[in-house]
Amino acid sequence: MIQIALKELRAGHVLARSIYRDTGEIMLSAGYRMTPDVSLKLNDIGIDRIWVQEQGLEDLESEDLVSEATINQCVLLLRKTVLDFRAKVGLAKTSSEEDLPSPKQILDKPEIIKEALNITAFKKVAADIYQELKKADPTILHITGSRSLGNFFQQQSVDCAIIAALLAKHYNYTPDEIEDMILAVLLMDIGYILLPDHLLNPSAKLSLEELELRKQHPDYGFDILRACNVSLICANVALQHHERQDGGGYPRKLIGKNTPPLRTTGPATKGTINRYAEIAAVAFDYISLIAPPPGISAQTPINSIKFLVRLSGAKLNSAIVETLLSMIPVYNSGDRIMVTSDETGELTGHVGVVLRSNSKEQNRPTIVLIYNSAGERIPPVQVNLWERKDMEIREAKLGESSAS
Image (cartoon, rainbow, N blue to C red; front, side, top):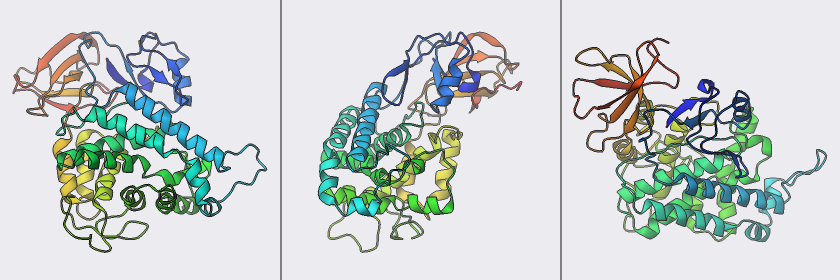
């Protein structure tokens, strides 16, 4: 299989991974042979990248840390939980003339919030993710998958939780702490649940006033979670995940010390960022780079590393960023690559994909070349770069060839 941009989709392409509607039903099953009108339907639900079958790539397997099925089930449960809450507190608009309660009006009734928000659903998702991550290698991150507009925030939360859990695992957090970390990150944007629908579209262009309103979600999230008797750890992650090391974040302008997020003896220093929130902030910024809202170009692993380095120290905890950088693979299975040089020159300019990553040396994966330098399809050529030290590659954009 190979991941392609929607603009590359052609009639006859066969899906390698099923595509789901926001409500959970399968829209197109794996094995479906594409027709000309499909790209329009996919574009309507905000999907801009899909996986299709490709000759010569039958051996390519997903290296995702959590199975696609588990992630989809988690996303749908979170979506249902959010929709149920909004309906119970009167935020599900039924007519254009209906006045909706303000966030303050809802927060003034903590007993209704506690009854309306199904925290048990979030705990179930956290437990399901943790069970799959227990057997995962904490030294390598593999996050892939398409995004749709309707479930974007839930998908983002799950991805952030996975990364945060691996960071916590790397720092030898206890099993209970890791599961707390997952739950805290799943809940960190819960404050968005009180905002109007038009502010929840990840692709919407908002005014400065609307952006300021969105920036109140950490306070809303803290108040919601305390009303639900959720731990102070989770509530503080919701409150502090947009704080910055130099004090330039919001809403409290807390500061960080750029030290590893380990348990310390005695009380935390007043005015500093919670260690869980520091991990959550790094995970969030990384996911925002590699899996942005539909319509925004995702950064390559190399470019995402460059962005994180720029944010390190002043914005993000430099110790956590350094740990994360050591875990980001240069190439994942399915990544599009181009040969930039080889000893004979015969394969320079050829384009293919990564068949499997190499845990010993992340920039020397096994690749399969499927297009020549003129952009023409060729019989698949498999190359193990661990054995071919003379060859160099770079990540190629979807649809790119040396002839384009």
